Image (cartoon, rainbow, N blue to C red; front, side, top):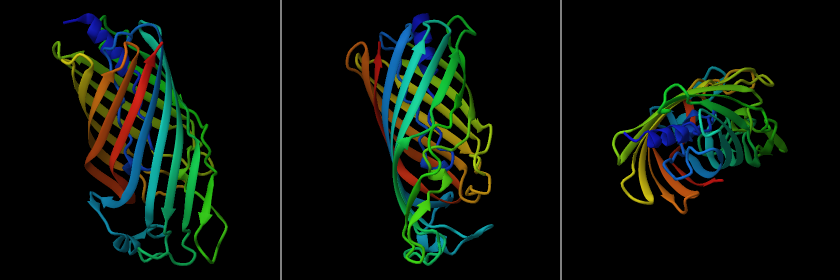
Length: 333
């Protein structure tokens, strides 16, 4: 087996750290935007990754099933009537800058920019019309999210098949943004739900492991597990701990185009704190993600994926996307 290919594969896999959407288990965004085997992969130097993700959460779900807004409005939670959300449209642009020593060590800086439009009928609706004093509002925000710094080590074996990830998420995103109240009895600004803010306000610990290998000259694969947990609460809010499991299979038999198939799973515990939605956060989800990676030059590559849910089990009532679309570019220098 080609040791160089294995080493390049392992080094590239270590760069992957999907952005957890803590507060909303149902919003997906678990994809690993990996490609490897390009001529510069695994070499010492910097790599710039710019990625766009689109998630339109417009389907209400409860448990493993869809639920209509009228039925959702009739549910009761431990804190009162169930909130009925209309939609949440998410546009993420994530910039990652990675440095590799060319050997065992590397570090990755991940900076997300989030544009999010949200509308809710609040907790006093009939599923189609909002009632008085239900906390209904609309919001549209565009802000930097929480920055991550991820280190990696892959020196456990000569072929660099196995490695570990370790890092932190910093509280750089705002968690105090407001929307516009649509309650005629209580007009003005309305504080956006903590789970929909660009930042959580917490500092998080990130730990992970990965394994990558070649099946043969034409097929490669990887597996990865990442855990992210908040080390503190902020303003009576603490996001739930999340676990991501990712695996992928890729065909390398074409010269410049590499088809890839991923399986992505995520488990997120519910948020806690007086300002958290403790009823409708958290869940378990699984996705299949077909995609393609193409080399434009020996230093530039493009990729695109579509992520489709296979299994969704959410706590309470949550908005979920029917699919997630991702596209990006990676440059080595």
